Length: 257
Image (cartoon, rainbow, N blue to C red; front, top):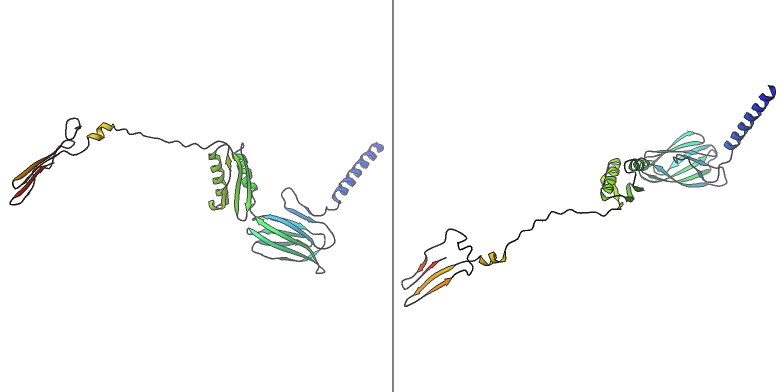
């Protein structure tokens, strides 16, 4: 029984040593970030460390430093805020979309870290929502300053419009969403056409019949003009101007239209 207890204790001790060794591994040069990109761990090295990072709008990132820090300076506090939690841990908070610098100094006044920070919209929520509502689509999102660019492919143009509308509602401004999604299906337009037909012979019948008598002193003549193809043998209108007369002492013109 004592032997069994000894083996169990030895296995536990080995497991503890293995976990401690894994936790004690030195950080690799550069940035080590979690899956959510919310942790930035800086390795202890020579000189001033310089990193380019991206912080989501209204999101935060934890910066872990290799030495005690005394001062943190931010170039644009309106866009990026820095909160010192402990001597080796600082929180960076994205306030507005844009860019800013952050400088870190140790207790001796030496600069240990320079961060070039880009603050942009966090598109994780919008991307997950589009995948949920349109499982057969391949939509990619990219933040450009304060705008969102949608690209990729969908089944039809209606899905592309719905994706852009959903992104605009989540952003809060339709003008900040650029829709460049391509549709696999071609867009179709339904037209309703009405054809009106008129026979050419009826058009020929439209016109004016003229009956005029001109009397000028000792000379008189009659002007007659009759349609060659009357409209079903009847006038188009039931009334006509009759007895239109122009007269002088020696001349007169009587006309009927």
